[in-house]
Length: 327
Image 1: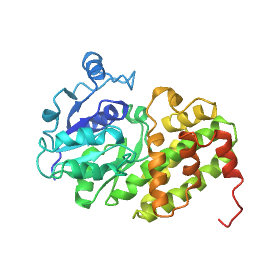
Image 2: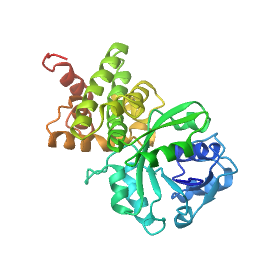
Image 3: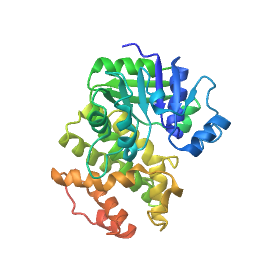
């Protein structure tokens, strides 16, 4: 598959960073933004409101018409998981059959419990769904700092072609056919990063943080196995790699959200107004875990804090007083 023209749908921090990735890889790139205020900022300053200080390469074409942007060899769909359906629906009539749509969100849709590639498949059946995920901060990627991610599609050849189309000296996509495993890693780690933020915000120490990450990864593995993920995917970049990054850095929006919760800031005010996908994913992940009798005490505690059923102190106590058991 020849992939020369890439459309990036979403002009937030991650979308503009990936547009930079694609243009560095030598592709012809267009960037579409649904938010009129940010679209105007992109046009006037060549800069996203969500990634200040990073100028967008002049070779990236800014497009206001979604149908025009969709005339590409591949599409990077870089909108939040909960907005995926709204953007994917109008793509159905605009794309050519067989066009890869690469979802770059990390979450599961509330209400339907659908993963992002399932949403794309249902809304745009002529598309080829794919997923890009892994340990990556938009600011690092936009500035050309070395980053490695996983890019998966059910067709291994499509995944390989997409990886080659986006890869460069500083951005290394490893290709995979385990779409579900990549999606599960990206969704679950956001919930666990909120828990890690609470640990940091309460000053519980590095030992507690290491324990949280380790036991959280055990929950991710149990969930992944139950929903068909390959173990090697979960222990790779899009699973363990992304979990370590988001649980250990204040740059993570989910981690920062957890720190605010630990300080007593209400969930609707935590994170300084920035999107924390884990807050949307937690109750969905818990519902899906319960449906298959998967034990996920950390995720259960976070969901309880978010819906007001537990205080932060209550959640910490619930985890520290669990019965002793074999590892």
